Length: 522
Image 1: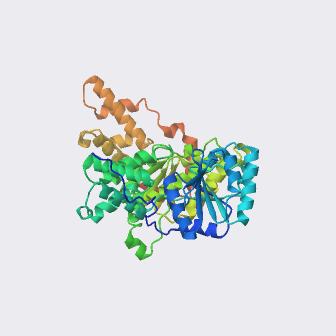
Image 2 (image 1 turned 90 degrees about the horizontal axis):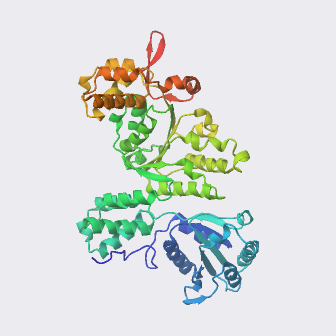
């Protein structure tokens, strides 16, 4: 089978790229005489094509540099043997006016820079400002020593939008001889949505693979490849989930709140004037269903679920932590609409309070960037953050405006435990009618949903060893040896309950009984 490649890649000179904010920003910087820009992007080929287009529009000359090719004049098709970064800077000083110089992989020389290189770069930037030359460093991550932080303007080169991905899809279909009319518009949109968040090269490869495997553009294959691509950096992963509201026992108020917002990102909601939901912060002890709710939320909203390993954001290299967060936000916004699940957010940002004394302020800067994004974001990214220890959370995160609502998930009550028992019994292919779920719920007072599942699985192992089916008696035997978390963490739970009073909403209904309040399941 011949190799399938896009013939209409947006990286090519002839491709008609959309006039977006990013492109306009770069053009304005050049026209304003900014001496140096730092483009952060993994898409070298696409940036090359974009810069050629910008140079043509501005009637500037474009010169490309790399350690392999030296300086290459794209108009004259000539090259200068300046493979060393310092030699390249010296050659740039001699170039004519109205020139854009794109330095590829130059950021690698700035990780532990030579003082002479830094001095020469500052001198070149000073000179280019007066001679209508713009120096552009292109790198996949931001690596700037303190001496150059104020000398260069950083521009995040956005991942391709749906229009650009549509160009790539069209090229693959033409190459594979798939007629456009044979593919419905809805199917095309699903394929493009499945590729959102990928680079143009990754999208092209995913489209081509779907043709090879299924003889057509298959959104499921594209989504599978995107999951692999997103997982590469170890920060994000796309979670395939089958959990739904039926998988959760209780939490009726939280469920009702989520269902009310399931169409909040639709065109109808925008026309109605509904504000875009930001997300929720769910507090509670481990095992009470916080993670399960995050998974069910993506199902309710009908959006893919991205899970952020927040601990991996913080890296040892200077500037890498901030770069990691920018990468996460860029990917989430490119894949949007989506749900972003941040598990145990309290552990991720617990160091923000004492950041200045422990890590030079890195945690505080990353945390500040995150909450600023939460406050200002316009993209349809619904954040579901879960936390166990509220005392570790910086107060800025809990302020109204960061999240739409703070929810508290307590230990399940009698009705909720009955529902959980039924869910777990069915999950392990048994019939709830064979068990007295009311008595089991009473016997497991103080246990979390996760602990109830553990009790039942232990009962299954015990019954399996005896060659029998599990019964209420088997479960009772397991419970005699089981120590619940509510006893081990009694002081922490009391403290958490006292803290949430007046600060967070209970995920379960409250009803007056005998002059007091107790939680019930709807």
